[in-house]
Image (cartoon, rainbow, N blue to C red):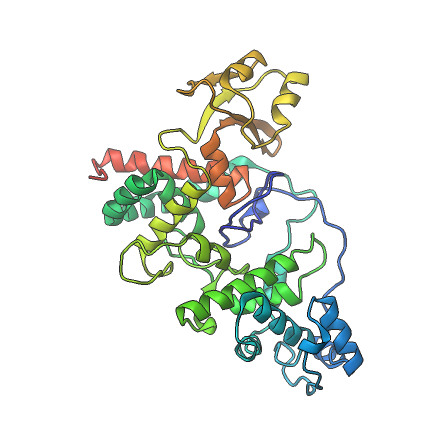
Length: 403
């Protein structure tokens, strides 16, 4: 799900993310973030108290970057629907702010946001796993590199081999990697999310839960991008289904990624990431190409790290960012299975914790890093690459090629 991730993650900033169910629960743990103000326990009471006097309304508007002359001061009625944003003053101010940012009709933006509903389950799913949950690569891998996804991937490869071949030729991204992304994200469209994007993004914009770092500004931006995309394409915002974090379609693109990276790969004059496998394939390939995918370069190499000590610490310090040449890693005591064709190619020593078992290491290339731009997790990237490899082996076993 481009632009946002909740799976086991590395320290570096992501560009993209695909979202689905909170798959990291069995795989990783995050330290709790500083406490944030809790969302109201009683939404009916909160809605009633959320209607300020005129002077208070002006203060809310100014705090959110909207000048007092731009806000119409009036009193909203008492809220008869506790889960509705139609009676929330902060929702009305947000609608006007997003309309200004995205050059939208303010009346249409507010009419749309009034139809959004608070979803308590969204605030639960967005939370990190409980403190103390150990990261476990073996458990994480088993969720994705497994028979159902491999069989579904083989069928997808068979049905879409022409589009996969064309995407590989156009963007330089191997079919196996595209298949890996779509398999991990949604099992090739089987699990694309059951929330309205409008509800999910409104909930995370206006009622982001306490207990993790506050990402409400990110989701407000994505809500604005959703409205912009819907207006540009004459799509009803009520009809867009998504994950609990607002990611859409087979590739689980956030609205901003749809606007920037999605392509009409089937040539029918519109982009449809939900029903067009060709558009999903082309969009994933285009996204990875824009993140620096290097044609012909493996995603990673098997590696034996140096013994614990200063050299190992220095190799691990840059995390997933490719920093060292193969020669530099070898001098530090690492042993690579295979060598990059270019002596100048940079690698990263990536460590994947494995519960109480030994840590798993790989040498990630620039292409490994490109996959982490889709989702800022080394666990995610390796699962994508290894699922794609498993499906490709099956395709080769049954003599299924891209030709």
